[in-house]
Structures are given as C-alpha cells and as structure tokens.
Amino acid sequence: MNTNPLMQIRALGQSIWLDYIERALLVSGKLTHLIKQDGLAGLTSNPTIFEKAISGHEDYDADIAALARHSRNVTEIYEAIVLDDIGLAADLLLPVYERTNKRDGFVSIEVSPHLAYDADQTVREAVRLWERLHRANIMIKVPATAQGLPAVQRLIAEGINVNITLLFGLKRYREVIAAYQSGLEQRCTDGKPLDTIASVASFFLSRIDVLVDKRLDALSDSGNDDTAASLRGQAAVAYARLAYQIYKEWLTTDRWRRLADHGARSQRLLWASTGTKDPAYSDVKYVEALIGPDTVNTLPPETLDAFRDHGDPALRLEQDLVQAADIPIRLAQKKIELEAVAQQLETEGVRKFVEPYDKLLASLAQRRRQVVTENS
Image 1 (cartoon, rainbow, N blue to C red):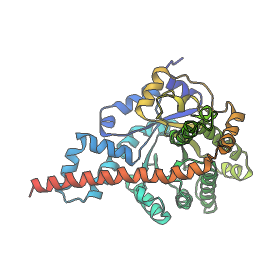
Image 2 (cartoon, one colour):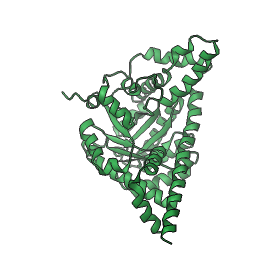
Image 3 (tube, helix red, strand yellow):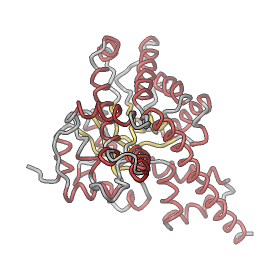
Image 4 (cartoon, rainbow, N blue to C red):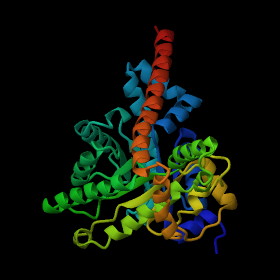
C-alpha cells in the first residue's frame, strides 16, 4: 500500500489539485514529479498567484523584454506570459485528463477580475481565452457573483469548462448548481454532447473562519459572551459539510438524472482557500476535515507539503453533520449570519483579486518602459 497520505486521499475518492503556478514549476520537471509522487490531478491559478510569480521571479525577464521590444503593450505582455504558463501546465496534465476519462487533469485560468460584475464581458473574455488556449483540459474561472451566474450558464451551454470561484455561501451555491444545470439543459436542447463538459464549484474556506473568528473574538473581548470562543474555527468546515449535503441531494433530483442519462457529469465541489491562516489551527485543518468522494481540494504548496509530511487521510466530510447544521444557528444567535458573511467575503474577494492584478500590470508597465528606454 502506498504510504504517501496524498495518494491515500486519491484512493478515498478525492482529487488533489495544486493552487499555484510559476514558470520554474513547469520547466524544472517539478510539476511532473508531483503528478507521479503525490497523484496531483490538476492546477488552479488566480491573479494573486500570477502577481507573486511574475513579479517575484527573474524567470520571466527574457519574455518581458522580448515582448516589449516587439512593441507589445502591457496587457499583451501579461496575457502572453500567462497563457504560455497555463498552456504548458495543461500539456503536462493532459495524461491525467486522458487517464481519468476527462474527470481530472484540468488547469484553471481566471477572467479579468475587473469583469466580475459584467456578464456579457465575462462571456466574451472567457470565450476568447478558451479559443486562445485551445485545449480540452482548461477551465475558465468565473466568480460566483450575481452577474457571474448567467455567464456560467451561457459558457456551459457553449461547451466551455468552468470553475466557479469566490463561492462562500449555501444560497449562492444552490444558484451555482442551477446555472450549471440550465447551461447543460440548453446544450441538450440544442442537440450538443454533454459528456465533454466539466465544472467545479470552488468553495472558499479559511477566509470564512478568519472573518467569523474576528467577530467572535470581539464578543469575547467585550466580556459579555463567555461562549463565543467555543465557536472559533468551526464555521468554514461546517458550511463545507452542509454544501456537500446539498450536492448529494442535487444528484438525486429528477432534473439532474435526466441530464445524467444524456451523459452529463456532476459539478464537483472544490475546496479552495485551504491554507490555514490562523497559527492556532492545524496546518492541514482544511484538508483532513473535508476528505470525501467526488470532491476536489486545491492546495497551496505549503499545505501540500504539510499533508504529505503528517496528514491523516480518512473519510471525514460527512462526520458531525448534526453539529454542522447547528453551527449557523448558534452563530446567528450571536448576530453572526453566515450568508451575510458570505456576501461580504464575495465583495472583498473580488477586490483582493483586482488589487494584485492591477499591481502586476503596473509592474509590467515599469519593466516595459525600462526595456523601451534601453533600446531607444
């Protein structure tokens, strides 16, 4: 039996993806090694990850200089670099895609975060990226905003794989499922195949606990609530477990079964934001608690390494469901409504992607000007 805890997770029915990308990971053979060693089955990216990769490493200097000398503008430089990395990652993961019958092996790329509240622009951008990359194992990331949902439906109907991101609440998750189903139903009506479409719903975790714990700490510090501390660190896992019950319930509906009969694949839940932010908690908190079949967990490198080193793999996603259902009620009694928390985190999440995206473009603009000046 393979004793690598990450490989044992795969045996329990969960796929492990990497929430990270940089040029060195791809060209050094490290990604291929992770696929073989850890059973890594996919990769996700976002503007924050690319800002750290491109601004923090010299690996991209030659490309930036060459593109600048060819009179490419900042957006064109950014896109050329990002698409090269995403395309190479997708090629390296293609054997996984083929081996798992199109279930895994995906690489996710996000539309511009500035489009989070514009459905039409999101669709145009997603289609353009999909066509530019021209690979079956690409997923286009679309935020789960109210405006993102119709974009998801249209993209699924067009046959484009979608990773719905910045998902924090159960109400919005049900709407995400509905958008995915409606897109599939439109494809079915149009006589197009359903078995080529893949999608994940990325439920963000650690950010929930960060915000809820902050409010609980304020209650404790006020001296007026001596039970608030007992709820610290419980909201995210509870909400994830409840989301999984919604997922299982969805698979029993007649509406879904009709689509499944035509070859549709279920939209798996993906656990995102799984790096532990509070040092008081285990560094594998959002991995161990949420292992369950037909799910995905995308891990930053540090969390991947931590779980390989000391993770304890076991099916826990459906443990303590009564307690999970009770957590939102207990929090509401303390004036902490998790659906309101979800809305706040969604708004903040969009902003947290816009800021590094703009920072990266500003950095590229500066480096471009330097090249142009040196060659003038």
